[in-house]
Length: 357
Image (cartoon, rainbow, N blue to C red):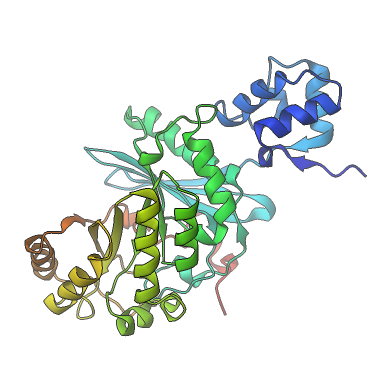
């Protein structure tokens, strides 16, 4: 039995070599690559500038791992949450966030998550598998098309802040960013891409060694180890000292300013003492801070901080010279806001959601 290969795992040069091995001209490789990454082909039969015989040969040896839209919800603020089906009925979610100044695609990198951050709905789901580079790019393409067709707006930004920890799917994540930014792919500037991590020190250093061109965001949420470990288990093995060292190294290799994401919780990390700890930690690297409004999830112990506390916290950081953005919730009414992605959609029954035991 012939075992087929996912053609989207191959580079352009590998596709050309495969074509030569079956007696075809290598220049067809560029045409195939364009169909896969620019024209969003989901079938070899879509590739109409290839001969019928070549399409048949491709079908015999390869398959295209393409995601399928299963459910879509639109928020009162125009945020769109999409449930995509991948193999064996597994579901992932991606979100389009339109604002007056930008239109952002928030994409997933894993089915579920191995981390268990207490404030995050995805952290309650079992990790099922990593997404391929193609499955990540597919989300971008679909959300890009939605931005253009529904809102007559170009897609301006991409954030890897959906389901999963991107750095724990390192190779596929990295390849997806290359395909998104490549002239042979979507041709978007890498500076329009932000990868968000819970803070895995050795892999942040690896990003530095790879001299990546995209932006890096770190989910910090507390700037002392005791509090951070309470809400993020990853801090037990990647404490603030190791994180600071890794970020310093990353910046020395890339020159890229880091973004610290700080979800502000009522009576937990919303005092000026917490703000001062954040100021001190942030000195490790040129940075900006996004203060994020907490979005409640099922069975969570946290509450949204009072607006006055949020404003005072942000003002304190600004007085200390930090660049600060306060991010208000988007898509909360359809469980599409930051930290809420947990397959609560019509594409999967609640009883079928794979939760951690």
